[in-house]
Image (cartoon, rainbow over all chains, first blue to last red; front, top):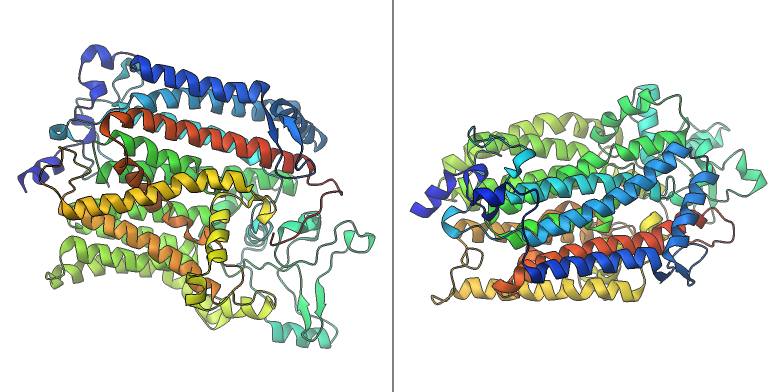
Length: 131
Length: 504
């Protein structure tokens, strides 16, 4: 019962997640990863990048269904579709930028996902009174 | 939300906790990928997107709610040579008729191209309206929220307006993902695996993302139910303080104004309050019930009175049934409960069937999704067994040794999923068009339970890698679906050589 009461009195921001415990670690723009997780991160990024740049895939919908096509060609045909339907240059640029930005941010998010560690049991964060 | 004064949140200096940094980056990623998704899906190809768009148009241009036609009055008018005015999907949108439920569709026909059909004859059944606004019995919250944007873009083409309205769905998706994060942190505060994987699964679940990139009211119901579930978890922990109860009632009222299926959330809240506050404290239960019920009823009552006055019931579904002669019952409750095809089709719709059931994911891909899902369900059973046994020698793992309130909360989350699924079955006993998306509001409960199951199968040291692999796999799944299905469909669907069948 006492544990529960203590946990309820805390807030997420006050608690010691691994990232904020040592001051020097908290100052880093990105948390450090062990070598094995760094290799995993690099592997996942390379596989996805390779698929997008040089991969081919079997199309599952639309007029090309069943065909094997390079991913890049699918992308360029999609941009052609936007152009044919009257999308302006800035609009196509925005769509392209959104796709690229999403991939870049996903790479960063993957790093953060790999870096997150369990909080020590005695300092488990809570968000009571925030709802 | 409150914030500690001695630890201001700031992007500089890395002073945000890592979990907060993760969710902030995930939310930014979600918003950006959704902007891309808005453009990636073919115009008006979302389920009922044309009907939802037309509803917004009626509300914006005429300042009133659309109504489903009364079949008897409509036929009587037709016999007199002049059918009563019907709230229709605008004729200029007929080129997209393949994405509607109830509009005789032959857009390439010279006869119908300029003057779309509005009446169909069904042998043995008589005349029926065609191309009417069949979503007119939906509650008005979403549509009313979209009216300012529609008005502001009134000079643009319908397609451009549709893209703008699609963009306006993104904040509801963001709310859903954020609620998943907060729900997870409320239930298992210090667990990294769940903190990463639960919001990630919600953010990258293809159909939830689809909802948050189209013109529709489902995403509002999903967001509101997600907020309610977060509140329920907080309430289970804090024994439902009155302020929280009032907030839950307010959210329930909005949920009921977003979609009628939100009514299934009410018994979940009731069960949670009884479990969380204790059934012996009947006075406390009564006060909490009033605190929840009053705002919910005050908000939702006018709409339901309108429904009753207009259609004679509280859903309008009797009139839908009358109009949609083809939308027959799928079977009895127990037939559907045990029908493997029904289950498989709901699974297909949970992950694919974009473009109003015109984009079917391949078997291999469905199996690739089904296997880890099945594994997670097995893990959940293992977790339940281990918690039930609660061995004293278990290692110190807060998730594996939940407090009583956490156990009760997990029961409530499980109940949420069960009720949501049974509601889909119940709908199937009335209509052929029972669909997986009707249980999407339970996504956060489902994601939490599935990831909890997966976690139960993982040894502690493997979890950091596993949470990255789950995240990476979800990203890759989205990339693959976009590249192999959505973009090829969008780029070629308006070419005449594509055959399509409604209902897949």
